[in-house]
Image: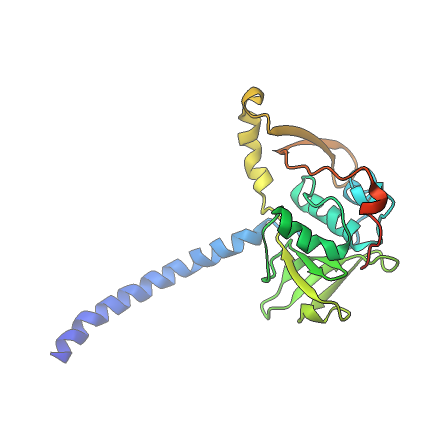
Length: 231
């Protein structure tokens, strides 16, 4: 009896093993595809890049340009996605709670490339997630360094500040995927869509992008919104 069971089970095990071995590369490929298009920033952005200067950066426009962690994070999100960030004001310690309350972007405790790492007084962008669980972030510092990268094994150990979580601001190329669809949409039937003109990263020319009209207008009283940045 046991011998018969073994003869029946053995071929099934072999077939399942073969199927799993064939699926493994596909599964790995699918997992890797989330970050295949992501280009980490590991060097300082030039001041001529519009995402980081007063042409497109609301923090620079209101008197708090880099070096400043929120000004950098805002510019980096803009650079990654090619569309205006939904978080348009506030100090570093405000970002996580503000995003959570308003539902701008998904959020959580797991690091992902392109996510904003948020502490009680600092924000940085996750550029790499390493196999050992550590992360490499890019960041800027109010009254300090214009730009640097740093590898963290424990994000909770950042200058004694309380770690709040990650804001998953990187859209994984969604804007590119929507572009053709939106361009075909009839303007009179899709008033939520609009054309934005952004300056290209090398600041050499302008290009037009189509995106969802998700712009959140900053308050005109910038002295209240942009005071007290800590990073």
